[in-house]
Length: 174
Image 1 (cartoon, helix red, strand yellow):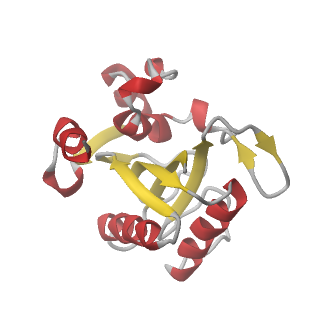
Image 2 (cartoon, helix red, strand yellow):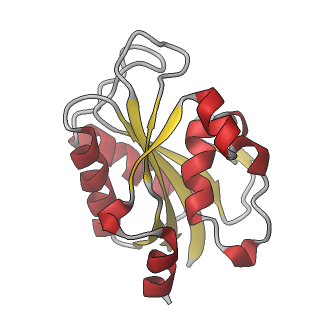
């Protein structure tokens, strides 16, 4: 089994329900175990700004799938949930991005790991920090996740996932 991290986002329809459904579907994929789930954050759109605010999350996964297999499973979930790709960085019912995969570095037409823009996107890094395990050491992008950075980047905590705090989730995972 390998460790992986994925980002989730939605800004159309019932955003929170879409995120929860995507997480449920990820957990239903053979060879994928959702280990930790971040809080939910509301974020201002980036790039194409004439659209509703997003809800964003991150999950820590354990998987027996190879990186491309995991990516294809995530893309299948997006398609099943009605994702339409017509405007770059545009509105979407769901977005799943594979961020990191067990230290793998790769650059193909289909997949680049680590995700090429994650280090410059606070809306990805803030929830990723929620699921970053202490045994991995210090979170490498700490400066993007401070309260001041969150305010500057238009990121607001929406809700804990399932009403649990990060500490409670960690204790329940043990």
